[in-house]
Length: 88
Image 1 (cartoon, rainbow, N blue to C red):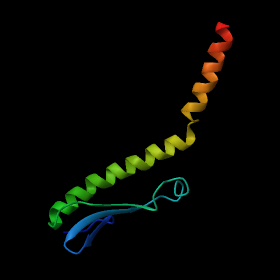
Image 2 (image 1 turned 180 degrees about the horizontal axis):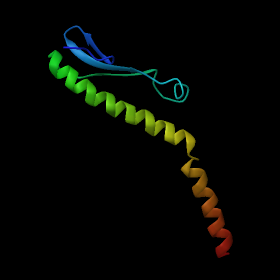
Image 3 (image 1 turned 90 degrees about the vertical axis):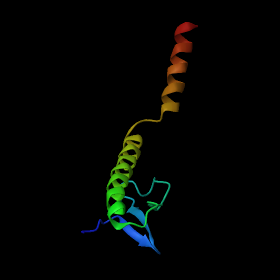
């Protein structure tokens, strides 16, 4: 059965391991995403690592979107000031 680039084994348990993409590496809170798949079975690990890889890729995409959006707190302060000025 073919492997998966993000699958690795520590002792007898399989783990998911992904490097942080270079475009977000400076702002991402970790140096890599690593966690246990909680299985010793290779076939099950392959199935689980595919699911985990998709979820981690979604986390990376969410992080990218947050970098391109202005901070919500800054917008809220500006909107609050505008509402204050209009009301008074």
